[in-house]
Image (cartoon, rainbow, N blue to C red; front, side, top):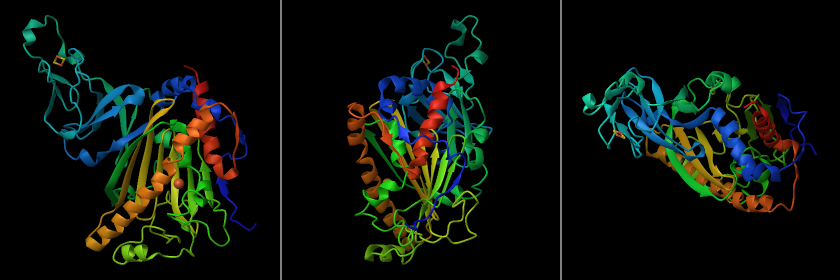
Length: 396
Ligand code: FES
Ligand SMILES: [Fe+2]
């Protein structure tokens, strides 16, 4: 077999292929994951598209951590997150959605907070002997930005820059060149780990996507679609998917790309127009990259687009999946059409991926098999669990 050999960066040697899979989806494990992984990780919860000016905010429910957050840009321009809990008697301050308001006012008794969290107004304040407004600010959650992305951490042990390692400074200008084109959410009767896992290997593309995108990847000289490049960082993983230069263009694709950028499959890499983080090994036959932002987010980065998928569990067998797609900013209807084709084709492929998750969870949670044997091409999965075990084993 003369298929491409994967160029690994990072420790890919000491991975145990015989993986105790059934152990990963139990309720006991999920209780620990919630405290030792989700509470201590930087989690991507949204972007700054709705936070353009001081006072603009969005509400983000995070049932995984039993929290509701208000993410708001302050008068000073800084983006912060606060628990969506009034400091008087705990009412929810904003029920949901997004917008822009000069102050955050509670609908129960009218206490008001600035967009930097300071308690400004206590209704009938003289009836509260000894009250000190400076001690009644909204309760913050650590918040940092990476490009346009908002990350929060409920118990930070390092900065976001340290957390993101190599990823931190390798994407100058890249994300800013794109705008949001679609989002999609679904509730799954499955385990969140399985969701992340299904998007961090390309082994399955030979089979479950054989009708929608039969020949986007691989082709002559790489029939088994080996990843040309795979990087295992301290926590995250990044790999490149192999483009197929012999892809047969369908009539619909020809129509979509006639007046707009060829978003998929961009089977050969065009040198020089992407930052170092995108196609990091400069593979000639390149389709897009897949990044696992440990623990629960997968990001796909392509030539004219990127996509974010996040998995938010509420139980060992309950997971909310949120997908957001971003693409280059269209200048005319033809370019808009190219985006629309990308969006609809992407949705079909995504549903094929999601379709495996409930059945796989049912199989694993039945207890009939304990372990699975994984391929070198599934190293990102093995690494995901290696990182998880380290965090679960860490001191309280
Ligand atoms: S609970 Fe908010 S003002 Fe009373
Ligand atoms: Fe897939």
